[in-house]
Structure formats: C-alpha cells, structure tokens
Image 1 (tube, rainbow, N blue to C red):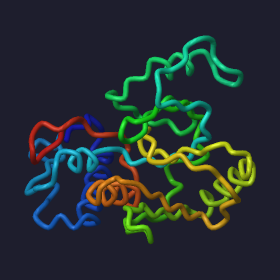
Image 2: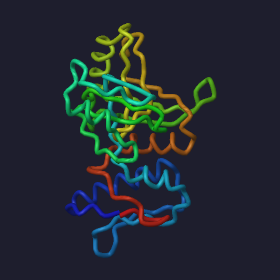
Image 3: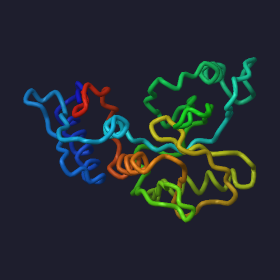
Amino acid sequence: MTSGTTSETQSQELAVIRRRIAFEQLKNATASLSPDGHDVVLQGLTVNTQQLVLLADTGVLGLRPVLAMTSAPRPGGPAPQGMSADLWHWYETLDCSELLVEQPSEQIAACQWDDSREYALDASVLDRTSVASAGASVSPQGTDQLDIQLTSEGAARLRTLTITLAGSGRQVAVTVDGFVCAALVIKQPIADGRLQITGDFGTGMTQSLAAMLDSGPLPAPLASARGPESIH
C-alpha cells in the first residue's frame, strides 16, 4: 500500500492495518513497511478481494439525515427546497462505481452498499473520533449484525439527533466511507450511544466493517489492490 505521506503517517497506517488483521484473526497475514519505506505490504492473505479492499479503506462512520432517496430513475428537475443545486446534480448523476472519501461535515450523494438505492444526505453528526468500539454478531432473527458503541461525545450527538427526528418519519443513514449500510426510521431517542445494524451483508463483510470501525480510521484511504496479497 502506498500513501506518499510522512513516516509518522505511514506508522499510523501500519498500526491500524495490524489492528484490523488481529481483529479479524487473519492468522497467516502480516503487515510491514517495504524496504524503501514507501509501501505497507500485506503478506499471507487468503481473504477475498472485498475483504482485502476493506482492510485499506478509511473506516469513517457517519450518521446523516436523509434528504432524498430513490431506487428508481431519479426524477430530474430543479433541486428541492433545502438542497443545493450542486448536491442535487451530484445525486442525479451519481455513479455507484466511484469511490468517495467521506468528509463528515459536508453533504454528500451516496449509494446503498449493494447499489440498490441512491441517497442525498445531510452532513454527519459524527466525526472521525466518535466510535468507541465495534463488533460483529448474529441478530435474534439470524441475520448478520454490526454492533457499534459510540464515545460519550458521539452518544450525546446521536441523542440530540434522534430527539429531533423521533416520530417524524424521517430517516437517518448509517454510512461507512460514504456507502450507506442502513437507513433507519427513528421511533424514539437513542440515549445510550449503541447502534445495531442488521442486514444481509455476509459474515465476512460484517466482520470487516467491525474491524475497520473498532481499529480506528486510517488517515486516508490507501490505493487500490495490485495483487492478491498487497495493496499500494
């Protein structure tokens, strides 16, 4: 993995990647700096390409009020009230194959993780430091579940948001690196800072998402894969 950044940043990247490998219990996997110090090299991996790419994604959690959502061709026309023309154009022309570096303080257009829906989303109430821990489990209904515990500050922001939206019928999108994992209708305030996201993610993806969030975010996403055992 090549970042073109300072040695301090590369050390941070290496530490995060190693935490993710340990979290996922990838027993034969190792991460180290290349001899020239420019790459973070992964070796001994037997995971699929999706899991490999998730190891190198930033890992930023967002909670964003939904401004617009569709699973059909987007309607066109002028931007609705409360949305800028730029955001509306982005939403109308959204390409789900493009990667997004999520900026929590900005409005974004985003895709559902399986590309089944497109969203226009408000700024996130969370920042890069809002996750205390994360894990993967199975819900009582037998579906994959992503369990997230926010920090005290993150929990306070979630509580304020859910007090505002409770009973309104409006949705809040849970995003990771600009992709929507779930869109929740808030029925009552959430005071304890706990989020439980269920869905047909597949066990491997749920575990990888939990590893990303629990290990803390990378300073920036690392570049795309160049082979089955390394990313640069």
